[in-house]
Image 1 (cartoon, helix red, strand yellow):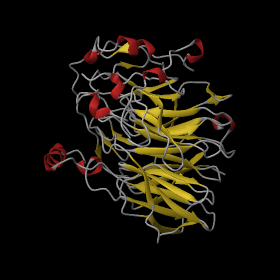
Image 2: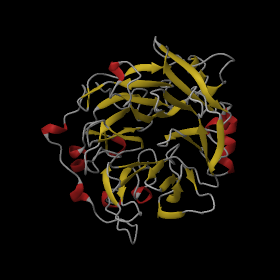
Image 3: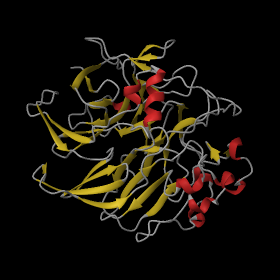
Length: 439
């Protein structure tokens, strides 16, 4: 197998090819201790090969997800085509990225259809657009809906920097002129940076985040495989959070060994970047936990050689003991196979004090576990910029029949509106839900 220098690389802006980045990997220090108690992990089971896809049956009329007492849940908007990610513009407009897994070939599509488990919700055509929603009368329901951008390629991450709007397609970073609260649709935009396209399962998503002064843009890129089974040459620039200048130049690896980092955000009042990571499959029903972690610049988080700290993956045993020993322990375990993807910190005041400054996480739900898990939004309390407790359920009710693996929908992207309500994208039921304090 090719040395890890091809997977943990420093990329030159000119060539976009790999160079050895071994020196950028930092050895853990006492300050790297996780914020909550690490979970007790079972022994890995390399014979585990469960495919338990959920069947999406849709929400019955009048039924909604369930929030804690004191909150109300309403349908913010529906009728989308796989609404996966949300972004709130400064004027309060909500952007919805509609995109989906695309089958690699006809055989992959037929295999999905043969499963009989709502294949169209897992794999199929992608709308490849961004839809704008605007609530002009402030009643908590948008009355303006229009196409913001279309003709994209599996878009996910969205970002506004000054008068430039950025979109992360699966294969590249694009930039468009933006002014007067609207996009210039006459401008075709410009591609700033190519990205490795597609990926294992749903690892085609690319998210975006800027630092406080807008001088750097961070791009999350998931792995191209479960555990490098196609070789590390297939993983160049993957399983990383990349850092670039706003014009797409100066690319470098900010952190590596992150199998599928999707949601990214800054902890309120800090300069620490946090991400939720979707971990590996086929090591057992209870391995490996997805996690929320503060990302350390230059840090290595294990993929593919180790998981949840220096726990060696037996499928790659003995290949890189040096990197196994350097693997950082994440901050908060979120449960194995939960497909934790969405992340939003709560920086408003409408929710009760316990939620202020904490993190909401969208769990899209399992497929590689005998008993389905996830399919909910969880909350992690924070204090002084660090997790102060274990994850707790916040928005549930997505599972219709656990024994039959039937679900009403699947939560993923999250966003907080200026009025303090929380939006939840349910891409399986083509709905965006709104959670607000009941008055």
